[in-house]
Image 1 (tube, one colour):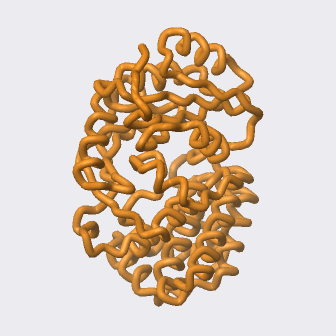
Image 2 (tube, one colour):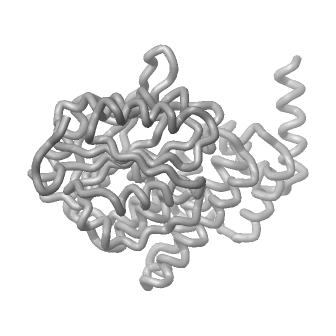
Length: 333
């Protein structure tokens, strides 16, 4: 299929690393879009399995597919390499193990054009095996309007930090200082870099992206790469400082660290090991006060058992170990 014109309506950029079991489903979901005026840029990021072979086979079926074959440098660098090749008016980043609804590009383009959007946010599904899909909102409606402070609500977790659930105008994205070094937490840093540019943001209440939940994905496995998450939060702090915004958002920033490091990776992480211990003490060095109004509000919204667990974890890592030992004994009993 060959679409004529000076530029495409959209470029779909797909970074792919060792996703031989999923990449065909991903690319076919783009090939079969109801909107045909698109280009498909697949970046093979140094895969060691049959990912590239499957990409090449699909390229033979559709001339809209462009392939970049490169050494492994991480997902954000792969996205950036794809962006340099892109000609579409809008950019959609799609991970190689995910897929999109057949009407995704058409719906997004129509909405973005109608609202003159620099960034259009939309909703997603968490996708599991056997066609098990769970609808997820990527933004809280009560927080988003024409007067919204998007930096604040990003830090408070009221809008998604992901780059792949956003339909982005290419001309706007090319003005953003994208960070290419991180492999974990890179989306948070880069979405903040976008918001610093004060884009025109709109929202589409449709679930169009299927985010496949793999047990082996980097967000599910706690290993040394998790310390990149801490690095990403330090970068967020530096971005705020460089733009003279840190004092304004210090409580929101501290809440971001509290929720994503302490609560998610320490309190509710069942993989208790040396990495877990290091995360705990690294977080303690931040000296974040629990008098923070956002932390207090979070605690007030938790059930009694959860509040007690958090308070125990706050005391000392010795109590963390005792708590987890007792939990394991009770489960076996």
